Length: 151
Image (cartoon, rainbow, N blue to C red; front, side, top):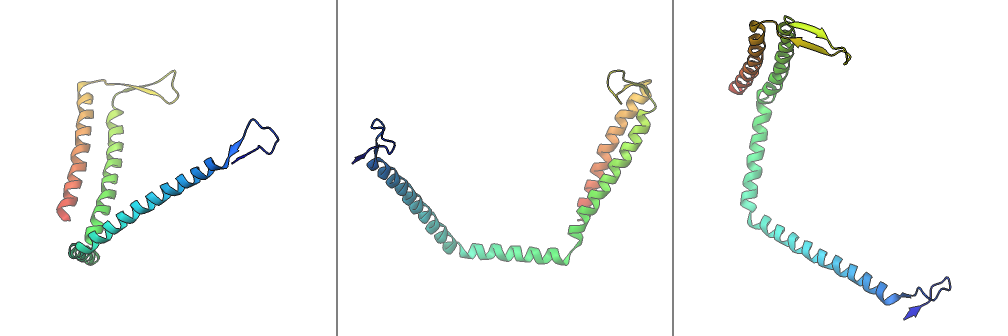
Protein backbone atom coordinates (compact mmCIF):
# COMPACT_ATOMS: atom_id res chain seq x y z
CA UNK A 1 0.00 0.00 0.00
CA UNK A 2 1.48 3.31 -1.08
CA UNK A 3 0.58 6.64 0.49
CA UNK A 4 1.30 10.09 -0.85
CA UNK A 5 3.58 12.47 0.98
CA UNK A 6 1.52 14.84 3.21
CA UNK A 7 3.07 17.86 1.47
CA UNK A 8 1.26 16.93 -1.72
CA UNK A 9 4.38 16.02 -3.68
CA UNK A 10 3.78 12.69 -5.45
CA UNK A 11 7.46 12.09 -6.30
CA UNK A 12 8.40 11.04 -2.75
CA UNK A 13 6.20 8.17 -1.73
CA UNK A 14 6.57 6.06 1.40
CA UNK A 15 5.73 2.43 1.66
CA UNK A 16 4.52 1.28 5.05
CA UNK A 17 5.57 -2.28 4.23
CA UNK A 18 9.26 -1.32 4.32
CA UNK A 19 8.80 0.38 7.67
CA UNK A 20 7.12 -2.71 9.06
CA UNK A 21 9.89 -4.92 7.71
CA UNK A 22 12.50 -2.70 9.38
CA UNK A 23 10.64 -2.92 12.71
CA UNK A 24 10.31 -6.69 12.33
CA UNK A 25 14.02 -6.93 11.56
CA UNK A 26 14.86 -5.00 14.71
CA UNK A 27 12.55 -7.23 16.73
CA UNK A 28 14.20 -10.30 15.24
CA UNK A 29 17.67 -9.03 16.18
CA UNK A 30 16.51 -8.30 19.71
CA UNK A 31 14.94 -11.76 19.94
CA UNK A 32 18.17 -13.41 18.73
CA UNK A 33 20.16 -11.39 21.24
CA UNK A 34 17.79 -12.37 24.04
CA UNK A 35 18.04 -16.04 23.09
CA UNK A 36 21.85 -15.81 22.97
CA UNK A 37 22.09 -14.14 26.37
CA UNK A 38 19.59 -16.65 27.76
CA UNK A 39 21.82 -19.51 26.61
CA UNK A 40 24.85 -17.80 28.16
CA UNK A 41 22.93 -17.35 31.44
CA UNK A 42 22.00 -21.06 31.46
CA UNK A 43 25.63 -22.02 30.79
CA UNK A 44 26.75 -19.77 33.63
CA UNK A 45 24.14 -21.28 35.98
CA UNK A 46 25.30 -24.78 35.01
CA UNK A 47 28.94 -23.89 35.64
CA UNK A 48 28.07 -22.47 39.07
CA UNK A 49 26.05 -25.55 39.98
CA UNK A 50 28.68 -28.00 38.72
CA UNK A 51 31.59 -26.05 40.22
CA UNK A 52 29.90 -25.31 43.55
CA UNK A 53 32.53 -27.20 45.57
CA UNK A 54 35.35 -25.24 43.97
CA UNK A 55 33.45 -22.00 44.43
CA UNK A 56 32.81 -22.77 48.09
CA UNK A 57 36.50 -23.60 48.59
CA UNK A 58 37.53 -20.31 46.94
CA UNK A 59 35.15 -18.37 49.17
CA UNK A 60 36.56 -20.14 52.25
CA UNK A 61 40.13 -19.28 51.19
CA UNK A 62 39.22 -15.62 50.71
CA UNK A 63 37.46 -15.59 54.08
CA UNK A 64 40.49 -17.12 55.81
CA UNK A 65 42.87 -14.64 54.18
CA UNK A 66 40.62 -11.74 55.18
CA UNK A 67 40.60 -13.00 58.78
CA UNK A 68 44.39 -13.28 58.68
CA UNK A 69 44.75 -9.73 57.34
CA UNK A 70 42.48 -8.37 60.06
CA UNK A 71 44.49 -10.03 62.83
CA UNK A 72 47.91 -9.00 61.51
CA UNK A 73 47.73 -5.28 60.78
CA UNK A 74 51.50 -5.17 60.30
CA UNK A 75 51.17 -6.63 56.81
CA UNK A 76 49.06 -3.65 55.79
CA UNK A 77 51.07 -0.98 57.66
CA UNK A 78 54.62 -1.97 56.70
CA UNK A 79 54.37 -1.31 52.92
CA UNK A 80 52.70 2.06 53.53
CA UNK A 81 55.38 3.02 56.06
CA UNK A 82 58.19 1.99 53.73
CA UNK A 83 56.60 3.85 50.83
CA UNK A 84 56.81 7.08 52.79
CA UNK A 85 60.31 6.15 53.95
CA UNK A 86 61.33 5.72 50.30
CA UNK A 87 59.85 9.12 49.47
CA UNK A 88 61.87 10.65 52.30
CA UNK A 89 65.05 8.97 51.04
CA UNK A 90 64.43 10.24 47.50
CA UNK A 91 63.79 13.83 48.67
CA UNK A 92 66.94 13.85 50.81
CA UNK A 93 68.87 12.38 47.87
CA UNK A 94 67.60 15.17 45.57
CA UNK A 95 68.89 17.75 48.06
CA UNK A 96 72.29 16.03 48.17
CA UNK A 97 72.37 15.85 44.35
CA UNK A 98 71.82 19.63 44.23
CA UNK A 99 74.84 20.02 46.51
CA UNK A 100 77.02 17.83 44.28
CA UNK A 101 75.86 19.53 41.08
CA UNK A 102 76.49 22.98 42.57
CA UNK A 103 80.22 22.18 42.72
CA UNK A 104 80.26 22.55 38.90
CA UNK A 105 80.18 25.76 36.86
CA UNK A 106 76.58 26.97 36.44
CA UNK A 107 75.76 29.72 33.95
CA UNK A 108 72.34 31.24 33.23
CA UNK A 109 70.80 30.74 29.82
CA UNK A 110 70.24 33.85 27.71
CA UNK A 111 67.30 32.51 25.71
CA UNK A 112 65.40 30.37 28.27
CA UNK A 113 64.07 32.01 31.44
CA UNK A 114 65.36 30.22 34.54
CA UNK A 115 67.40 27.94 32.25
CA UNK A 116 70.89 26.98 33.37
CA UNK A 117 73.78 25.34 31.61
CA UNK A 118 75.97 23.18 33.82
CA UNK A 119 79.59 22.60 32.86
CA UNK A 120 81.46 19.83 34.68
CA UNK A 121 84.63 21.40 36.02
CA UNK A 122 86.59 18.30 37.05
CA UNK A 123 86.69 14.57 36.68
CA UNK A 124 85.84 14.20 40.37
CA UNK A 125 82.56 16.10 39.89
CA UNK A 126 81.66 13.95 36.88
CA UNK A 127 82.11 10.72 38.81
CA UNK A 128 80.42 12.18 41.91
CA UNK A 129 77.24 12.69 39.85
CA UNK A 130 77.34 9.06 38.69
CA UNK A 131 78.03 7.94 42.25
CA UNK A 132 74.93 9.83 43.40
CA UNK A 133 72.77 8.07 40.79
CA UNK A 134 74.14 4.70 41.86
CA UNK A 135 73.53 5.68 45.48
CA UNK A 136 69.87 6.41 44.76
CA UNK A 137 69.38 3.04 43.09
CA UNK A 138 71.11 1.28 45.97
CA UNK A 139 69.19 3.14 48.69
CA UNK A 140 65.78 2.59 47.10
CA UNK A 141 66.44 -1.12 46.55
CA UNK A 142 67.77 -1.41 50.12
CA UNK A 143 64.56 0.09 51.53
CA UNK A 144 62.46 -2.15 49.26
CA UNK A 145 64.27 -5.35 50.27
CA UNK A 146 64.14 -4.35 53.93
CA UNK A 147 60.37 -3.94 53.59
CA UNK A 148 60.03 -7.36 51.98
CA UNK A 149 62.16 -8.93 54.70
CA UNK A 150 59.94 -7.55 57.46
CA UNK A 151 56.65 -8.57 55.87
